[in-house]
Image 1 (spheres, rainbow, N blue to C red):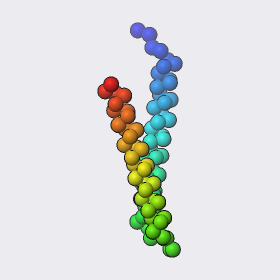
Image 2 (cartoon, rainbow, N blue to C red):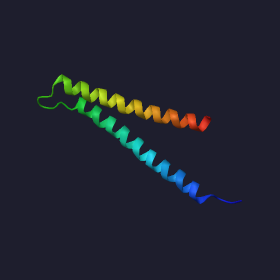
Image 3 (cartoon, one colour):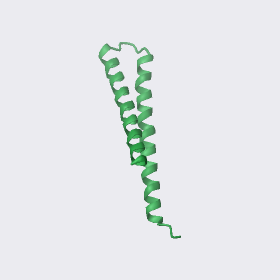
Image 4 (cartoon, helix red, strand yellow):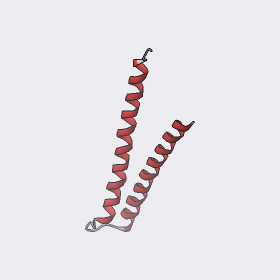
Length: 75
């Protein structure tokens, strides 16, 4: 049995980068939602809408990445 160490390292590297990116994206979504719950002095309705939209966009990208990963595993 021969192990292709280059391919294993490549898979490990890509997995590490994607995991860190996905966690970072989810964290940005949580931070954007926390902007909604913390009342800021002088916050307008436009900034709340922007925070909500960006949070939902981050979560949608997370769901898309997870769905694509499941697709790659099943296909």
